[in-house]
Length: 453
Image (cartoon, rainbow, N blue to C red; front, side, top):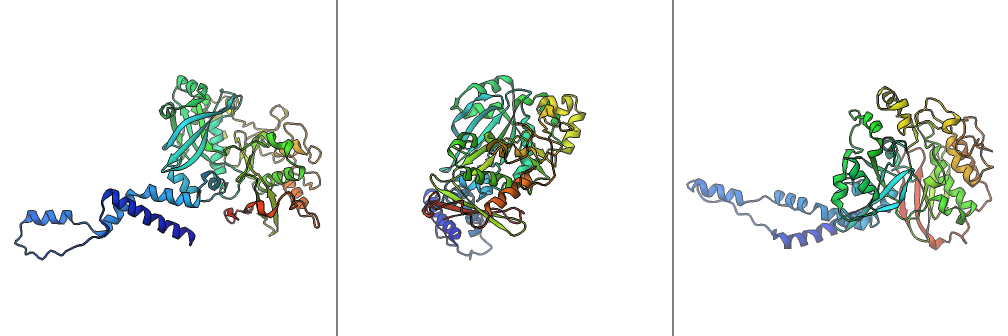
């Protein structure tokens, strides 16, 4: 009902403002033509052209004011676009309002570098503004031919996008690009603050968006020119990594952050393994300063675990992931002349087996144990993990000392479900600091549901 009232109010305000500017009459009168057929043919045609039906007038008004009405709606329902995208609230409407971000419509300067170029590439923050409504993305570009292949990160992102409305721990992927030439690539890489938006637009060619089909895509070129590909993804503004905050977070809060990750990885274990899950690849999103969220996790066995956290975990960097949809891609890469070693020399981690040389990582061989790396980095004695960077696959169930992500989820569920234990005291989480509730259905029977207090 609140949404309907806002829309009605917005339409009323917009109609009044538009009527003044465009001089569309608020009251239209129509008189029937009582003249005989003896009137001239020319006059008859002239009168019929000037006569407009109410339907056409309304249609023209709705078309002319669509963007303004959308802006009013979003500003009332989702004043913070980042928060709404993070929790799946009106996500599709926001993307539609900005033409799905990918074409760089409504980008406003400056475009700033985040950090400095590193072995992982370089990143640009891109800001959008349309009808006084704002949103943000980041453009991630490669640094060398041997870096993780960003086409593959985009490919994985297409699969992950299917889960972003169900689970808050994933970020969304918006588009794949290619730099047109090396001078443009070097210019964008080395310019910290870009004030001329046309420089970015002219430097990049849009290759694909999530709405496109990739079956006709020239994957061979992503091997031959892997350095020049880039990917546009959701931006979590001002969010530190878990690595940067680890020393200031208590053990119980660290476990709550781990639970946000492993509760989700368990139901996806047959379809997804991150393969590079460490504290540097977990962003900590704080929706409201000095306020916490209650996260309600609904398990397939009808049990519910409620976590309190000032941060929401966001998993980033999908360049080494295993996804169950990539077997055909591996076959294709092995058949292409420029994709040496089935893409292995071009940033694709598609080894046919798990071994110590590649830290037991493969994008086509599922290793449900590898993602325990995050758990081990915080609580090294809690899980079974062979080295600092990888471990062989172990599917044997062990809830007391987890062997894989399913075990980790069960371990954390049991930990937070112990009777008589109070982990989230009102001293640390006072009722007046509660910001919102987030309901997450792990069987994906419903989209996550976010409600502010």
